[in-house]
Every structure is written in C-alpha cells, then in structure tokens.
Amino acid sequence: MTNRITDKIIAIIQNLDENRQAETTLRKSYTIPEILGNLDIAIPERGISPEALTKTIDQVLDKSVKTNNALFMNQMFGKQQSIGVLGDILAVLLNTSMYTYEVAPALTLIEKECIKRLGSFVWKSSETGDGIFTPGSSISNITAMTLARNATFPNSKKTGLFDNLRFSIFVSEHAHYSFVKGALFLGMGEQTIVKVKSDTNGKIDIPSLNKAIGNEVQNGHIPLMLVGIAGTTITGVYDDLYRLSEIAKKYNMWFHVDGAYGGSLLFSSKEKHKLNGIQYADSVSWSLHKIMGVPLVCAVLLTKNKGILENSFAVSADYLFHGDTDLDLGQKSLQCGRRADALKLWLAWKLEGDNGFEGRVDGLMNAANKFSEKINGSEAFELLCLPETPIVCFRFICLELSPGNLNKLNKKIRETIFNDGRILFNYSTYEGKIYLRCVISDPNMDETLMETILTEVTKVANQLLLTKHDLNINTQPV
Image (cartoon, rainbow, N blue to C red; front, top):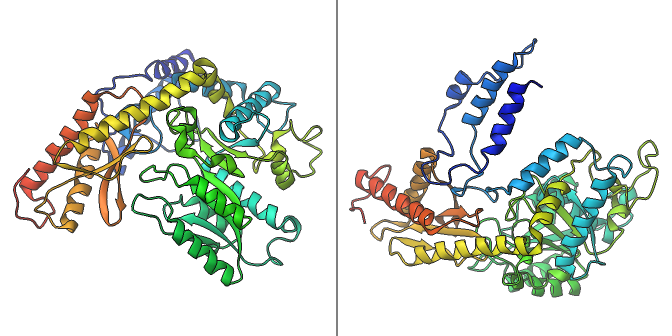
C-alpha cells in the first residue's frame, strides 16, 4: 500500500461529515454507458499503478450515491455515526472471524456483551436472552423461522420436513419479503406463509388474524409461528405486540418480532411503549444500522431462551471447534466465517452510552414529528399517517386531478427530484395511492432542510402541472 493510496483513504474518512445542505449532489444521473465510459471496471492481467488506482477510486466515488447525508432518505439507513465507521475499519484491520474464541477472544466477549445489553432492553433483564450477529435482518428472520420449526418439530433436524404435518406461519400483508424468501430457502414452501390483512393504519388486523388461524386449523395445518412487526417497511407503524403475544400463547405458536427498523425505539423512555408486548417474544430481529446509524451491516437475532441457537445449529467439527459452545459463537450461527460487526456498535455505545442512544432516537422522532406537522399545515400535501418511527409518508395534492393522474404526478415528482440528485427519497403504493416516503436518518435534521424538501416538491409539482408532463389533465398549478 503506497502513501498515495493511504492518503486517499484518510481523506475519504475525514470528509464523512461533509456539507449537509441541499447544494450537495448525492447522486449523479449517469447512464450505464456513461459510467463504463469513465470507469474501467475490467480486471487486468497485470496490475495498474498506485497513481492510476487513486484515479479509479475517484471515479468510483463520483459514480456512487452519497448516503451519509441528511437528505439521503431513500432507504432505512443513511447518516452514519463516525465512531461506528472507525469501528468498522478497526474490524477490517484485525481481520479475524467470529467463529471461535481462539481467534477472536476480545471480540467474542464484546459481541456477547452487546447481545446481553440488547436483550435486556427486550426482556427487561440482563440474565434473560441470547443471540447472534447476522449479515442482515433477512437472515435473522429466516433463522427465527428455523428455530420455530425445530421447537415444534425437533425430529426435523434429522429427518427434514417429510414426515411432519403441514404448518402455517402468520404475517401481516405488510411484512418484509424475507419471510416468503425464508419459506423458499428452508423448503417450507411459499404456501406456508399466510398473509393477514392489515387495518387502515397498516397494523395487522386482529379479527382477520383470528379468522386466518381458524381456517388453517380447520384445514389440518399446525399454527407454527406468528410474526409481529415493530416498524413496518412502508409506514413504520407497530403491530399490537401485546395482543399478538396472547394469540401466540393461545395456539402455542412461536412468537417472533421483526424489529429490524423500529426495535431501536426501545432505547427511548419516551417511545418504548410502542413495543409493549415484545417482552413475550421468543425471538427478535433488530438492525442497528438503521435508526442507530451504525455502518452497514449491524444486525442481530435475539432469543429469549439460552441454548436454543446451539440446539439448532451446533455441529461436530473438531478441526475448528474445540471448546465451550457458549464461547465458540460459530456454533450459534448459520455462518462459519463471520465479520466482527459487534465492534462498531460497541464502540459507538461505549462513546455515547444509553443516554446518547436515547438522545439519537428522540432526535429522530422529534424531526419526524416536526416534518409531519409542516406537511399537515399545508393544503398542498396529504400526510399518510402520524409517524410512529422516523418515516414520513405524504403526497402532493391537486383536487382537480383524477386518482390515477394524482398517482402519476407524485411518481413523476419523485423521479424528477431523484434524477436531480440533491434530495433522495423513495415512493411507495399504499391502498392504491402513491406516497412520497422520507426516512429520516439524521437526528440533527433542521427545519430549514424540511422546508427545502417541501419547497422542492411543490416547485417540481407546479412545473409538471404547467407542462402537463405525461398527464392527461386540464388544470393550473396550485
């Protein structure tokens, strides 16, 4: 590694907290030919010089999305904690794997401490619970499905699913797609997943759930698992976890809470009531790279009962595992080689403490609430729902437009602003209506930036109405 390349890497780190204002371009709208015209992605037979490599790094940076910015609101991650970035770099420099205590003694104890502390926020006790870091909440959810299967059908570890009765896993229609993917991956089949209707707020509808369970039982299927969502993907709302826990107990189902996004509100004394009932969960998925701003990826699966992960995943491999399965974390995981993702969380938590983490959550919620108040205060916008997490969904309104054309308009608003590249947010369809979806990831987002977003949406909307771009309408800007 030459000094030139080292200096380039240091400069990138030093510029993490760059200009937060709307003038910063977060994404340049290059076409694929334009990218390939300037970025030589071919891997050569003979290596290139360090000088050429630094220019290549510049091209990669230029043609990538700047996610570490308050105005990147396109996904459920964004503004990073700088100490977490340094923690990730430290993990790379240590270059070890998390399968045995032998090769990762300090990192093993750090991961166990993080799991214990996270579990204490769920189960109100540092003596309850266990868990493992995973490569993302999709794998956490799929792992939980495996635990549920093995708890009800312990023989499936040896014989598979061939001799078992059909079973059903109940999820909201707004549940993450990983549960369907998990059913495919685990050989359960897509029909195992029973999607239950949600109410108008996006929460799983309890009467519809009870009816769905009754239908499955009548068809001879065993109710295996019930999933509660703590922060839905589109609107960020919470299912009634307490009522779901009672239903799961009634039918002896494994109760899993997908808290990938909204689990972090447990850090806040003011907000944690939204997760009431999570303490009855058998397992919880939780991604700290979302609300908490720890760099990707930082995700865990937590389990209420100790030993259940080892019971499902421990195998004999004496070339690797020689000691205590509680310390050899590879015996709890689907993975063998695994990064030390706990380190960046641990460093951030050490630096900020519980109070700092609580302040981050409260700051994000305050920003989301202020943003929604501004939207509600304008006749030009319609708010989908009051934010329960730092997700704000809204749409531009023009009363003279048909529902279909209003959807076209809002989709075109997002496309235009996205292609401009200074403000990045997404859109989604909810009950037939297209909404603009902003995921706030910077707890210091101020009202100036909020006004910038709404002003830009209004300006683009009026331009589109004036030109009637791709819209079959006869109306004037509002």
